[in-house]
Image (cartoon, rainbow, N blue to C red; front, top):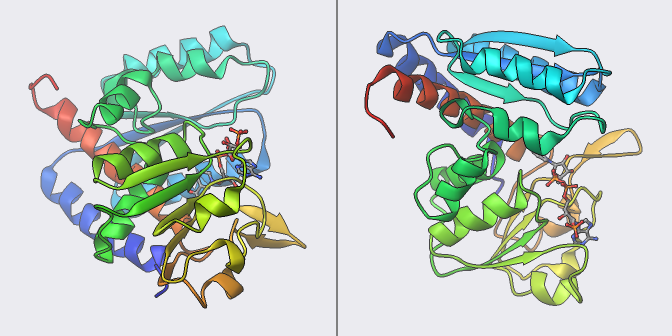
Length: 280
Ligand SMILES: NC(=O)c1ccc[n+]([C@@H]2O[C@H](COP(=O)([O-])OP(=O)(O)OC[C@H]3O[C@@H](n4cnc5c(N)ncnc54)[C@H](OP(=O)(O)O)[C@@H]3O)[C@@H](O)[C@H]2O)c1
């Protein structure tokens, strides 16, 4: 079974647009980009285009590559205090001269639609999430749409980044999977991957996961986005692995579109939470 993130995300975006129209709210997402990294610029453009589709306003702020940490913080504080803005997203990676951790912590936790603020990660790790990082949340949504039950399964996550690997492991744990996190220092990686009923790869190495590393019947989620001979490929050798997996996400058209759809859902959630007086 191909886990078709493109179709699934389009369906969810349609529903979201209707919900936004019916809500009477005017959700607004601010994106901050520092420097001219072409991949980051492309991601921000895709996010802004998707905002348009679902009737979310988007405000784009572009800062030059030589911007200092303090100046980024001033911009984030302005957006934090702007009552018209519901979500604040700082596109990563930031130039090396900027302290990424301080910038992430400066985003107001109730506008943190990326879910990277330690407060939101803390809620996620305590099993009571509010804003969850978009890529892992999008993967859980995809499992839901295809009725893939993770409870009691052996789930192996490759990669331990704050953006993908760690929150993915937390979500799977919250959903009652038995979770192993692997990284570049894991000894005998194949031994771990071969035990996986659910394998999520987020390492950024083209076609690294080969068929002999996969348990027959496993569910394979490929987060990787890599260039190989001018083509976009994932971390998984899709053609070989699809023959033995029970379900697999393609690249492109798998996790990527689910990530953007989830960002839209998180932005609407921020707008809804800010519109009611309840303290969350
Ligand atoms: N589809 C989407 O929406 C989406 C969203 C985000 C990211 N991505 C893609 O997903 C990939 C990972 O992103 P990221 O931000 O999580 O990357 P990252 O911060 O570079 O983390 C990579 C992780 O992979 C581990 N790793 C590297 N080589 C390994 C190996 N040979 N064996 C086992 N583990 C290894 C690293 O281990 P150490 O910790 O030991 O260094 C690290 O934990 C990238 O290709 C990125 O472009 C896609």
